[in-house]
Length: 167
Image 1 (cartoon, rainbow, N blue to C red):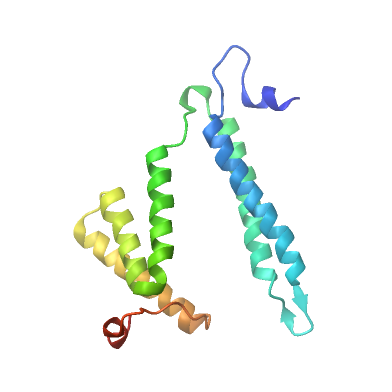
Image 2 (tube, helix red, strand yellow):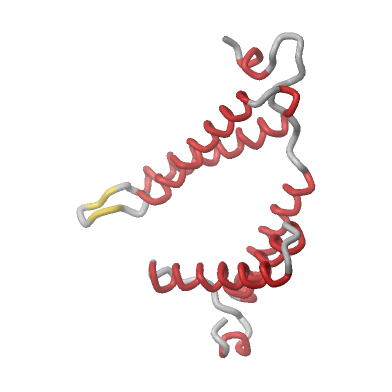
């Protein structure tokens, strides 16, 4: 069975849109790259888990999710097959880029709060109360989970005023 026959039914439309296939391929490629790179870091040491164990697990999850996504796309009826919402993809990639750029300037909590608020209120069209509570819980909760639970330092604000209030 060829790849062409997997992706189309005889006499029907394309079952999986090329843009979806590109997304699946990109996720699979990143997953495989992380898997290979993490093995070089070492999965296990004499003291326990090595620095590559967590990235290896995440790469395996990403690669497995790519396979699962492809199988879901292949099982979906061809009438519902459609491409990726480019506006959504652009908004997510652009907002992640802005988040990465602002992280060292504003600190993790404030920049993550703004990122979540944007996606919840403007992209997800939730109410203001729901968006504010979820963004606050998500940004502060993630910060405390990483800082106190996992002992991972996250960026703090470059502005002394924001540092004095704990951001």
